Amino acid sequence: MSLSQTGHSVIETFKRDGFARLSKLVPGIIIARAHAAVPDVIASAERIFGRCQDCGGVHYDFAERDCGNLTRPFVQLFNAWALHPAFRDLVFHPSISQAARALLKCQEVRLIHDQLLIKRPGDLPTSAHIDGNYWPFDGPAFTFWVPLVDVSIAMGTVQFYRGTHLRDIARARLQAADEETASRVIANWIAEQQLEPEGFELRQGDVTIHDKWTIHCTQANASSITRVVLAIHVMDARSKRFEALGPMQRGHVDLFHWQGIPSAAELYGAICPVM
Ligand SMILES: O=C(O)CCC(=O)C(=O)O
Image (cartoon, rainbow, N blue to C red):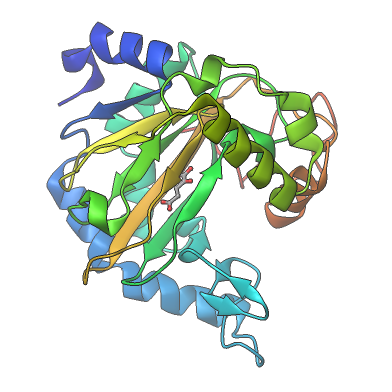
């Protein structure tokens, strides 16, 4: 189903709630090809970035569950689109770019980055967070959360706190904070407000979308099935970079090589292509 078929109601829901489901947005064959390519993508990342001698993980673009003292909620690999044509076909599929242009109400949409998030049986919850806190650029942006397998709540489907994209939770302070502090402030705020997250069971081809300011999380994978998801983060192509406000944003500047992009410029260049 294209966004023009679901049309106005999805756009309105997204604006009001800060998240929405798009059923059957991406053709099953595109999802199936990407899913089949996961082992190749991981092998390519290992070849390029190598494995850590201490922990066996690949630190730069690929975070393993047990790495030093860190405990991770998933295996995470950035910019799979650059590593395999099946992921390029998914990220740049017209159903994704058309939906992104309609939702952002703009002529051109830019990829911020994608990330393959593999939550294995027993992997931990992803704590409640706000994507916008990590991104040193202005303008609207959001995420397509694209499962490559059917996902149930028990497998750790993404869950959202309705309407939080419109709430004032001291954004400037959170953007300047370190990740641990931001996480604690968000968790306390949710508890004070007595908010409960909401999520959907999704089939291959269904996706959810969430605004860059929507608080969201995922539960631990309590099933025996590995949850494989590609998150695709997109922004209005006219968005401008600003100086990183804190360690989370500085981390993203390093990770995605945004240092060369001056303040007040668009995130032009090969790493953040127009879709
Ligand atoms: O899939 C997850 O565990 C986290 C996803 C997420 O935070 C995102 O896509 O923005």
